[in-house]
Image (cartoon, rainbow, N blue to C red; front, side, top):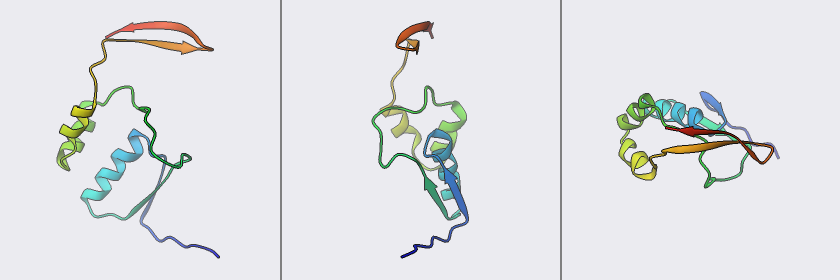
Amino acid sequence: METMIQTDVIIVGAGPTGLSLAVQLMRYNIDFVIFDKKEGVTDLSKALVVHARTLEIYDQVGLAQKAIAGGEIVLQGNLMHDGKISAHLDF
């Protein structure tokens, strides 16, 4: 049996960009569907940082404070390649 979905917008990818777009579409009551290759929610972040403009968009729908509360201040990090540290970053 075929399932048919009718929508205004299809978002491919539920990463930071796709979810920010979804928030904006919700503000304007535009119907959308999100497709992502993963089946569920991950406990790993797909975003290294959240930019100020993203927080402004989240604030417009009441999500900014929740995002900030769930975040962490990062002071340093390592970039890995083939299981080895290839660069160290101090923020």
